[in-house]
Image: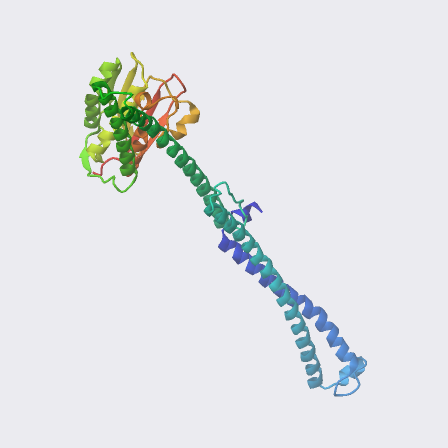
Length: 377
């Protein structure tokens, strides 16, 4: 049974048809032997055209053509009965097989309708009708899970965007009403505050546009052959001043003999810049952020490791989602908008690479590894 469950639908259909043929053959043989023999004896005992057929003596006196006619009539009757029974059995087996396939597809169809209606919790069990059906059920369940995750992310993103918009809009509305009512005056401080809230809205809009371009068709790449060491040195030089102001040591470690990579320099600079900014934001004064480039089976690995706050295990699978922040208490000033790592993931995927996050836990730092394919020789 285990061997049969691993077979494909084509093998199962072939075995089913072979079973039907075997049933037909065995049925014809059994019925023809039993019915034919009984009918032949009945005809022999009942007499024929050539004389008395009641005993062996009569049989010996019967003409050969009369005996042949009796045998053909008996064989025809037996064959007709056998084929009729075999046809009925074949139809029953075919109906059972068709109902089994139809029932399995019907469950999948019902689940698909429920998913189309928004019930992303719908799942189907493996029908056991062959490898193709089991893989189809597994793929459907994975699709439902991804849709459920996407729906949760969409709802959370809408809530996050609404939260990000609520504070500056409420502040702007409150001050404008106060100005209209004459409660407040348009002082330089008020103008600066209003301008800051407008800038906050502008930054949010730019973040949304950036992640949309990175994840959509807007992420067009102008690839060039680049030395991985040069890319890391540029990222370190760009962030050196900020790291010094935060009291964080920014170190560089590049392996020798690294192959070049075929990348869009501006986009990869954005990737590394976002990772370094994220590391500096979560590393306290006196900590260290290390930039490393080393060979990898898939090409070249760029590693940004810090000794900062770390990431809890339950948050690791979600750090590359849009607007996801492990610490929900952080605002845009202290925790960022939550789109930087989403942009990193989209741009790395556009380069044909992979990115992953690792952390030993809270307070034990985090490591982000970007793996890019090496440029062809």
